[in-house]
Length: 640
Image (cartoon, rainbow, N blue to C red; front, side):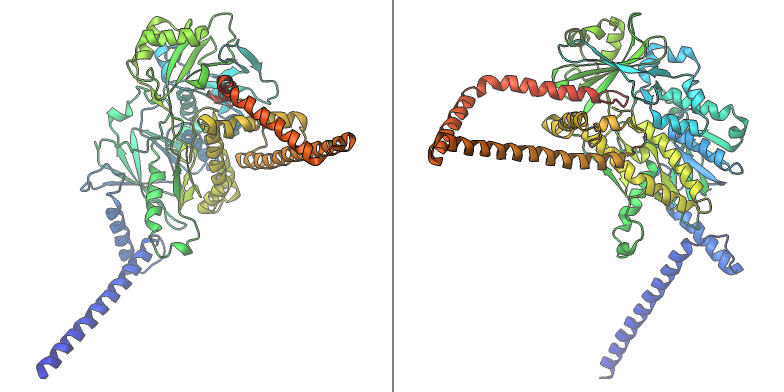
């Protein structure tokens, strides 16, 4: 009995000790988690301060090996730097963000990090008039959105000096002459230039200004990885690594437009990584999207927490659409004849839109860059395709442009591999987390058919500037305000653009049919019905959410009008039949029998002619679809 009782006591005591140890471990873990969010600069006792500093060092060392990390786990950072603001991405949105911040906070300094080499000089004619470079860098059109943002930060004049104005377009539909249209209802003139030249202009705007050069530090060949996104009371922690000469000098230009591939490009580690802390991180790394992917991974883990339902902010996620209308393209340099206008956007297409060509001016002397758009399954949409077959295709479908392409140029075009267009993508329901904000292609990615991507990226910078003005005492509150203004816009932009790119019958329902209805109803009732969505994109005073809301209202009113018209026609027809019965003294049964016989005869005739008329109907429908599809091919936003 004594032995049995002692065993029970031992077991009971062991259970008690295990419970106490687990409770103590849980309390320690809770204190550790709370300490991770404490700033090291607050007033603590000396022993508490040492504990907090140790916790921060432990947190940093534990977070070094991340999902997107290319640094070995045993790499120990030796340098730590602080910056008032950090911008990731050296594209148009990133450079303009750095300019905006430097102008807004003259006592602060901002660091910009970019993986690739510094941009080329925008004024070097030997670079931009070379056929190889003309075909290397894709052209973009700056509409009122981009022009207003650049003007707001005093950068537009230098950009306009190297741009080419486009005042209209000329389009060749299948088996038809070219139709020229000049845009006379716009308050601005679209300016076209290569994206790399725009980047070069903004880079020179910074380096040539003593004020900006003193406050903006440009770092090229550097990769930035987020370690901690910060909060109201803590800074953002980043890690910078040297990409090396192999990446920094990557100027082959194969990827003219971001392909939408989410795979992270890892840099080669040549030096020890550097830890950077900052009060504000502006993520404009559109092609890499390292920060957006990191935020998504953090929120994916937090969704598994039992406390997720009491969170104030909804979980962050990236919405990626499967491309159901994949296209690839090749670029072609060409010189226009002397009798062609040098300020138009030229385009042509084949039947079924199997092949589309869109050309924009690369300079003011008639040098154009044409984008040849293929369906992905086209046998010519490959590298090292048959040049004579490509020539025959162009001679048959686009002879007006085939004559402008030399044999040597065509050989180069046939040899080079095609490039892919990006897939539609947006982040939400917010564009910030902690002290980090996303903008540009990092927040919303669209195909470059209407020039919306780059212009909206520049507009994001302008809205962020306004948000910082409205909340000057709190960075996190300013970022929250920016998200409130632009998160819905990003979603509406991507969804609206995707409606213009659906294939086949779905494209007819989402793009061509609404285009026809809007044109008819706006012409008949201009004060009630707005123009088409494509036209509204050109109008100042409309944002993307406003356009979507107005189009939903127009669709509802159009359905009501069309339904009312059919009901009215039915009532009138029924009334006429009743009057006819009374006038002829016929019975209802006889009239119904006559109408039934007439209807049956009509159906038989339609069935007999169905086979012979099917091809004609399909051709007509295809022409309507092509007419609508032609308006969405190109780099510029075009009004219908």
